[in-house]
Length: 396
Ligand SMILES: *Cc1c(COP(=O)(O)O)cnc(C)c1O
Image: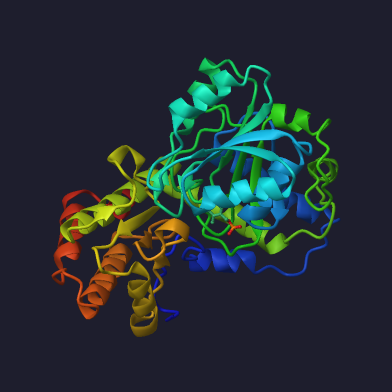
């Protein structure tokens, strides 16, 4: 990889120089008031990004995966049932994590390229008259397939079934890049990580937890220690931490949220949509299609591109890395080889995306794929030059 080139993977994402510097702080005594002064704005900022008015935010030294573990281990007991759709590698891994914790997972097998099946979720909840299902797990943005699921729709299904289950949402590859509405969607736990939309190094699991999920901690019997949120609540209340916190990352998170809010969260979401549209125009111009089965499912942070018959997406990704020093994403699990992925989230502009598309095209030409150089780039250029970029708006 060339350090000069941006990455086009769905995380870790490109880091703004300013955030690298923000993480670079001198040693800080986390039992001093200085830590609280740094910690509280980060927590308050996450609440604004999540659109969350009640409940607690937790910043744990971990990654998104640890965030999943914290979510379930604090709220559930061995043998509890959770309902989850499996529609890609990330939703699969959350299911696997639940099973390894001794939970019983009612799995809705869903074709990869589809989103969480709202009608089937409602049917499963209606059938569960004994209310065995404690939690519905939903992957907001399935990073393996580039599919956005309808979380508002899942909440409506839960309400329509009049079911008391909680709603846990994996927003690791959507939060801070795509609209998220913790309150509006009735989310009970939202999980994010530092290295995607927040444009920071990996190392923080970021959780929003509703009052209902906090109350579930009282009876939840799954073992937990490092991720015990009750310890966090006790320490955080006095501006402290139950063990040594990753202070640099927490400082970086505050600065990240300032940057996102300076741009404006709506503008950030609009920029991601616009960048994604350019990528999708390019994919169409190549004669290919997104893995996401229909436009309502398109993710604005990642596009998994179905490659032509006889081509292997992994070859393209390997060539992009070895010859051009550019990171694209490989296909995972069921879609390994069948797709390659273009991550378009975080610190990214029109110009950067054009470079990624041009690189993918060079690789296609090198590999003898049936694509003419420049076709995808032109399609994206036409979109980008025909609408006002975020940059120009900001300069007004
Ligand atoms: C990246 C990702 C994860 C895993 O996060 P880690 O930080 O790598 O542990 C989980 N869910 C989704 C949707 C992701 O994109």
